[in-house]
Length: 375
Image 1: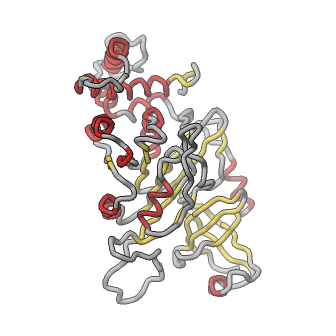
Image 2 (image 1 turned 180 degrees about the horizontal axis):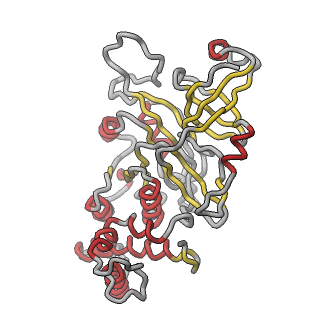
């Protein structure tokens, strides 16, 4: 058995895993998890009774070894008989997770950023989904960005409304991009800001995640589906989370990076780890405690610090609680005005307030999933 090497999980194939070796990042090999590690990773956490959907996640750093032949023989002729065994899993620095009553699904780990791709039209944006993504990112210690796509499909009035929506998240200090995925000028700006590290793209089906990956890399790396005319929603084309190393140079011709490091190389290639994910229909947060969910909302977090009760639980029966005062204000405003931005000549101030308070309604929905508290 050869000496263990370091690699990154690039895809899950049931009980098998795609691995990109650290020193051969142009190659993906298939390995399995050693038996003792399967037992170890199946053990339930002290804080939850839910099981993990997959034992490993895309982005996990692992140690693996070859049996049957040497490492160099494998890369020179990978069709030769050999087994790749995952010997150990390195502790994650962060993770992005969603959950339901039965299991936790880790979408990616060891991330430098997570980008929610939100279509402004066909399919229409779901801001409750976006708020849940931001909550999960905060809880997992992952920096979150928001990318609004398909701005080219909007008319003038729709563009104005979309910019108001985007401004709410910008004021909360989330990096926000408002892009046409087919416009090279927009892609050049994004490439410049994704110059290093690991990035995961998430969102509904049909929002443009695979198109985005193809445009960033200038390669047909993922198949692209069409929007259903019956439901105005995307059709699943990407079926598994998949990671690749790519160069994002802003040049006329950019190729996937040859990661074999050369001595005396003066200019190092900008290589990034990009993770594309299948379209997500829902984002449950049942593995998170109420305190974490509240703190994930910046506007609520500010109120928590100003609450006059040091031991306040911020429930509806907490009289004089600063958090509850804000939630009550949002409920009253909502009942009086409703959320209808379709009328022409709507008041911009009212529109901003409604969209802002809609996040607080998302919070109340998260805290009371199907009538049962999630903490």
